[in-house]
Image (cartoon, rainbow over all chains, first blue to last red; front, side):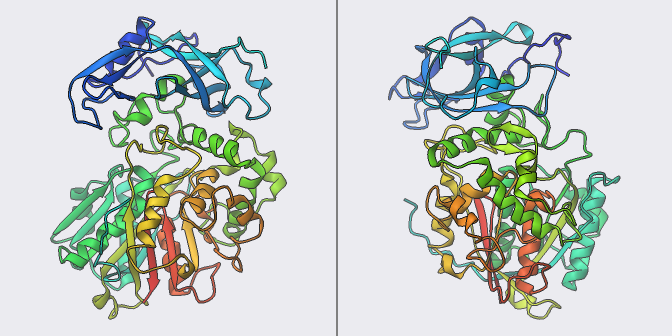
Length: 147
Length: 394
């Protein structure tokens, strides 16, 4: 069991490592950021300590627009855990800066999804709390959820 | 494009013994004991003694320590040992690495093994991961760090994103997945070692099984979390000729771990509707070793979840992109089809020893004593999406 989790439904906190903590600390402050190479200016995600394209160690942490397009999704039924309301709507979103995030889609009733037409829809970021007073970026349909 | 390579080790090592425990949901004994029992069976099958073994290969995620295994099985001197990354995706790397060790002279008799309590262990293999397992190989990596806080905590949920994108791109449906499973379960139904023994299903049964991840993975699309062990004994092709069984040569083997690839997830590759690693793997298997797809008589293709089976068929080039559903609907996975597949029932029908039980079935096919025997089978492909081998009857 994760420390800090109570009977209420709250997400587990992200696992912090030396290589990823800046992303999660920004998220806890309500900012969606990504690493961009300070030399060749290419974005990368998940974070890593060296640019895989030019081997530069110089990196900028850049605030992102928080907008993107749904690349894929999933409706997670089983198994369930105490940390989420099920089914969970999993999301793979292509951000406008050219990087991809695993996340959740909020504001959509999973039972209303009867086909794959969510793919290609525009989304915008917001933040959901986790245990340990952290937060993670989640996404909502940009048009407010009209289908 | 991969650089031109001229591998010289193909065909120089052979599988000469296979062994397994029962496949169950509650082994009631340690992984060390399971591995020891499978190795004991495999050595007896090979006509070799513990003292002949001088090499060990397993998975990075296997819980059986080499030192404990050596002390239990009575190996006298180990000259070569290796562990292969990438979880089940790396499973065929155990066999190709063993073959490489033998071809290079680093070892003479190598045991490849996997022991697992996927069902009765401390955490169920398909269950929700709330903390990185010390031996998972996923410890600090992408699968865990970037998925867990979003409830994407299970292997099925990791692979579902790719599967849904695949369905969207090519118009594949859950029924298309189900047709493959009906065939695998038909094979499993006559395999006494299989979880699915005497339990065939219909397409309607598949469609009525509950969602694990909607709209791509139903209960009957999931492999069986299994307790058990499999061991494979390899030695040189020359030495194998003097042993009891007809040698099964490791004719080809390869690894294709691509930039931005992950373990079990692969969320950051450009096109998730294709199994890019399998395409690169096939370029090697069918390009560098002088073997063609037309030579393959039987396929054992890693089916942790049904969608990745179809995606591998396409990635490996046995049909075009988006055409696996038609290939399957035409009956090509059956014994009289173009590529009989997973004739033991696969990981879904027989059990999940993390892929290594596909090697035992390929070996039985090439020895000619499989339960669902492909008549005259001479070459078998075993694919775990990013690692693969071609085995051939000597």
